[in-house]
Image (spheres, each protein chain N blue to C red):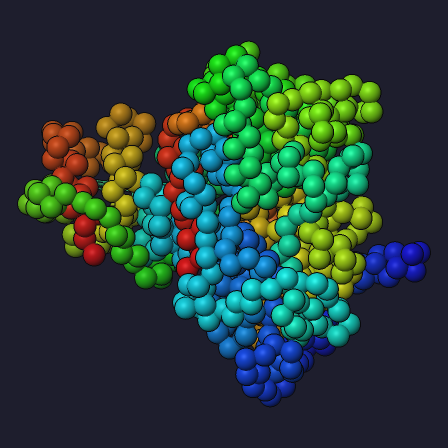
Length: 192
Length: 427
């Protein structure tokens, strides 16, 4: 028994010291894999209220993480989680998820709303949500194929003032009816 | 930054040298030589499925054999919702392994593990021997039933369920609650921490109270907690209980159950105080899954497996990694999400070691959602990393915290969390 314990302590010490001295800091993949339990493998979400990160632009992810961390963007969990990472980590994770294949979601959407949204999007949102929402200008997030329930939660937060809209987006969004806005979200969710 | 090979071999028990050996064909049997590229994973739950999948995703030249006694897995997270009557059956909590094989080439062996020979690198199973280069154990927990007088490991749970491993036990507890007369008493006994899922017993309290409120007027639940206070999210649970279940929950801290009498449905606190119930849910104190104990992997506390915080390799036996509830992961709670994070870091470093690449420090996350009513949930989250000076996993300061209040939106996110994590494990 005593022998065993000595062996145990010895093993602990030896292994630990060598591992500590040699292991490299967490890579982008190590950091990002930990997010996948909530956001899905490689950022492709299977849960309709949880946003997909796969294919999202690096700039949009970094911008979102910084706003979560500072509290500028409201959140349930992301505000606290963002405090666990540095700006360099945000860039690493943003790059990692931006390189993952866009994850086409399979959701039931309203065809009439999609058509309505398609007719509205270019003139109202297309300046920043470019290429049918597949891309975003600067740090504007991509919305193509994003989960509708997630987009609806975000729009509700914008309209209630909980989440602050960019000024130029607000100019477009404010005059629109709830129905038209919902049609736009159906459209973006439908883009593959 | 490349690591010199000698140090590697010292650190990871020499498998990287085997990686250079020529690949020998193994055919259908797992008892022959491994070709130096075989990882065996024991346990198909939150940790094991992820370790198996991620090793294959990172390097498909490594053979992965996942050994699990059942052909399916039932999630403990969310099983309290079934007990509370919010789910028809356990199907939303059940996963199969076929897509891990189809999508990632994980070889699944349905068998009971009967022993491990760490020196020979062999796992003994009900379907024969399986040789490995590296072994990942994700065995979950077993119960220290010997600490409760009168508890028979086999027969007691048949009438006094623990329901702390999801499946038939979960169904039994719900059936007992349904059969209980109105005005009855449920007794829930919580062991001293650490145990699997720190907020779990308090979510269970909430779900049982919700069930009683709806279906069994004038019933109550007595909670006998061996701990001095609610172990996790105490403020939020107290708030929720006051809001929804005043007069239904009788919470009694520092009440350690030491004895059970299945015949007259009684538990005894510290050998002196009897508490009787119509339904008794006794969650016994816990330790690492039996196979890890039998293999001599538990540390000085005799309960949990000490591991290297970077590789999750056992500090007792080389080439055996222990993840999930069974291991000592520093500040990380024993949760499904922790196991998920640990599995990925362990997989990364096994693949790197086998390929002669440098090891990567652990970075992980924990998340636990708990429901307080049909529509309201709360969570705790945190980010974890290795502290080199302490040689242990610590919480990143400022990242750990709980929800500010009970919320409906958190319940909506929680449902998607379940969907995503179970999809991760099964596709």
